[in-house]
Length: 553
Image (cartoon, rainbow, N blue to C red; front, side):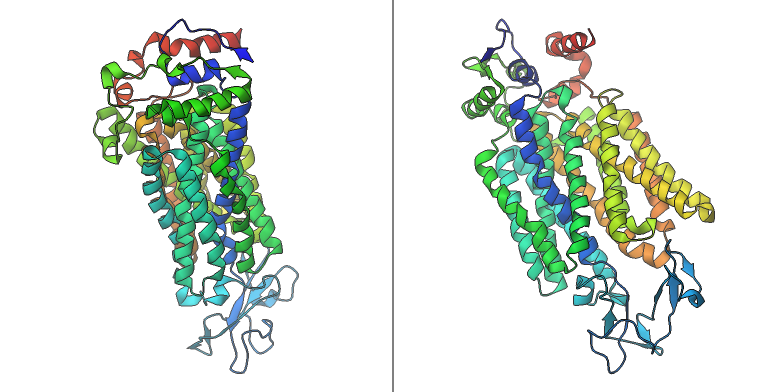
């Protein structure tokens, strides 16, 4: 067992204590970080499962003597529209050409609205669209069900964010996994669309309790040098979930069994109650030192080091200036009570719904590439991996703020440029612009998960992150109706312009009003936020400087 050198009785911040004795990223941190990241794969699949459960297959009005399971192709009706492989309209006269897909009248027959339809089951066996006839003047239901997920996610953010700070990260994490598993399995049995929407809201409710808490737990495990892993790597698992969803949907074309396949692996995560410990940082912030000692002693044994007895006596808890801080229960209102924290909160509360709106809007319209939706969805998800690698390589070199702002600027510029080019934008140009936009906004999402927690003190960090995730759902709900309803009714300009302008505005606000946090210790109290970096003690910052000098040498 390695014994760390003595610090000569000097008081330390928890950050300094963590990487002085345990290391910034030891074996224990790696194992626990991997464990909390795995459930985010299932979260990702639930979030976008409606894309395939409600996949749009061709349908037509049923003729008077036809049954619902009658063949879709018929010689008794004329084609009304045809599209080529690039999803562009072509004359009906080209219906016989290879690669041309034509449709019949969908909502009326001989000028009269029809109430029975025949669906094309040549590639997809059974969809929620067919089961509940989400067609024609009922198309709003499709967007509403997707929005229900984000409404649930918003409620979960409000509740789990506060609970995470009050009762601990672990309890919230496990509770969310249990809710996700229950709703995820029951959703395949829902007999009506509104009950399906309620259960989908339940899976959305669990989302922040798993994903946001995983980021917070991961970030609180490691030292400043490796905090980017808490969002970048978690984002990689989220992208992996989307890829797996696309692959599963290719082979499982009955939406009910697809939901069962998505939800079932979460049974394994129930074992986390015995595997994943409480956040030691949270325990220390609550002055529960004996419980924190159990967690950190296990970490020390795994990392092959020893901790001093009564190590908590070495911690600088700022008792002299803010004696009640470690045990004080703060709420969302406290984010607005002091000037600097209020400024940060207002700006961040604008950034989150913008990044959420653009990201989910692009994910829901993956077939903008043309061609096969399944492959496009997988391809669009795969783009996130290199985007996350770019963030990983740059966020600790050039800083959080320029990476975040740069992602907003690139995504917004590509969207606005696509609109400005009009018909000049060929399918290949549009594909390139979509790829750049999706990659940029993915990097932005990863960056904001790293950046936002570093802007808030430990005593209210989880509450702040919960509020961020809550308000972000406004963007996701808007994206549901814009991408799944408004665009189909009025055209893509009603998606491109709002998304582009708001993304550019978010980049400007980031550069003007938010501080850089790269390589700095996490603030523990509101007082540290208000005093600013200039008033932090030289002793607190010295270990970081020494570490960087050693690395350079």
